[in-house]
Image: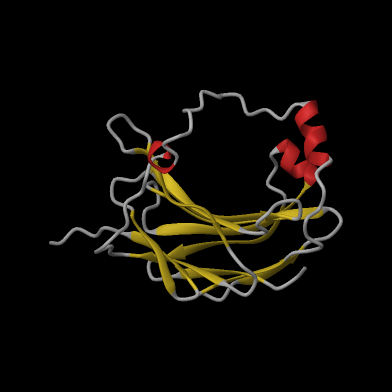
Length: 202
């Protein structure tokens, strides 16, 4: 009997971005992050790996790819992955950068003050998420919620499903590393997909 090797496919406006073979992976996360004080307003990331002894370590399939207003990102969980793209290590992506040895990512008072002082580069954001099983949600920025995150998360413990989420965050959430306000949370199975779009605002 042929073994099933699930995969995640990522498309932007119907054009292939990456296909990730989930065989021998422990976790894979496809996400979009954005904030009013950052450029670009929305960035796509896809990363994961196998962190056990003898595993592949941390791999990156998409790093900081800009999403433009009006573009639609689609992420689909498939039950069979025939052709996949090779993930790259941080060293392969950034060969000229020194390997970081930082282990403490605590935000101290000086860092928090610098973050609070950043100027806003955008007036607003408006994002939309829909799933193939009928869930949908929209999120808008306001005076408190100035950043957002969309994610599709897979792990080997539940290999036949992914979790999808859309959150917005205020600055205090970011500094405290809190989840923020949840606008959508769900579970997708084989054949299901989730789409994300950044609406046209200033």
